[in-house]
Image (cartoon, rainbow over all chains, first blue to last red; front, side):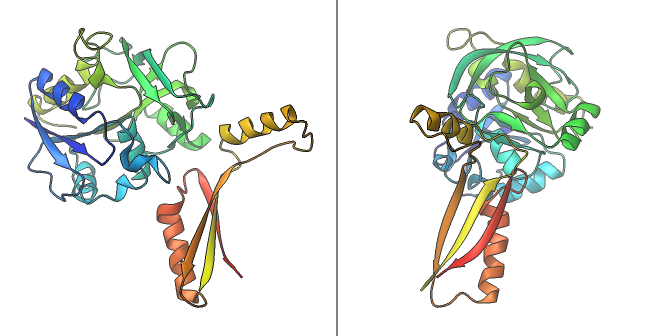
Length: 226
Length: 81
């Protein structure tokens, strides 16, 4: 299975994301923001960083990169797509998932090992976990506060689309402690914390993050996303 | 040459932590006038000659598509003399 990892100018975590893909047992394929070509990959990760310097709004300029056009079409057709941190912001700017990521309520940049709880293990990116499984993965962001209107929040809660929630004190002011959400179909997931930094005990808090990457392989073996 | 100004502000119901930080800094400097501060963005777009209605309509589209995120922000477009 081939998983593409997109690099925009200013992306930081593409190498770690590609490494996580390899640890999970898949082939990592580099995708360049300026190529309108997905190179035949089966799934795509939009990694973290500060694409286009976070100018205008985080993810606002990347969202119009040439690679996004085939990517948006493929994801709307059911291809698994994971946006981590800045990638989550790109997904929100592309309106592939509802809501927006705004400045952390306390205005500080965060960098911490964060406890989260998996609340929906039926998505393409979370099916390796048990429901309510608790993980520790790094959280590092300046604009990670998930915001949406009341109606959207009610819809996300009602449809089980909040896939992960922060445990303990709210780290950034996200509504309802939201750490990650999915689209209706469950193939597109946006996640603020960084599972790709928690795939090896030598370089992270543990290996709790690996499950996101093995999940997408599992979803393919079991016949694709519902 | 004219300037088209696009002002982008967070919607009133969206928390503005930057505005709040500015609002709490003002009293520390002895300014007691503010009950609230909201912070936004201003774009100054230069065009040749007087802006046409068609240009202004295009700016509206660009403001909706790129300059603002309609999920969390409102915008206004005007011509500055």
